[in-house]
Image (tube, rainbow, N blue to C red):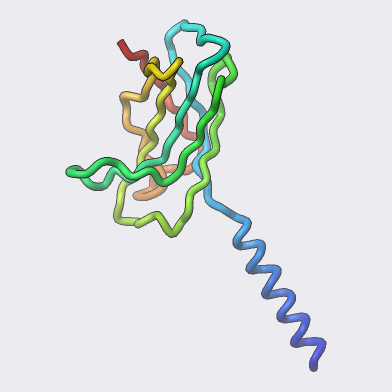
Length: 133
């Protein structure tokens, strides 16, 4: 009887640990159409999942990946982990991407890429950026 209790405890602990290891993510790629070669250094790509539910308030960042000097071939893959406790199924979440060179904005997305809730995806997202200025 005592062995059965210990076995059950160990199995429950392993299930809980495995469940904690499965952090949800948003994955996809970032690309741009312009034939522009980015400099070798000083480039930062900032990819965010944001809560955009409140029209009268700034977006809230749910998850972020910063890639310094990303590879010069597009598309650039991304994977952003987020805490499921930060997600409200009633709210709306979207991707925001910026490419900065020496602190100046070069590219951003001008289209909305909705994710996570309301049937929108969490994987296979293909974000296309537009040149700024």
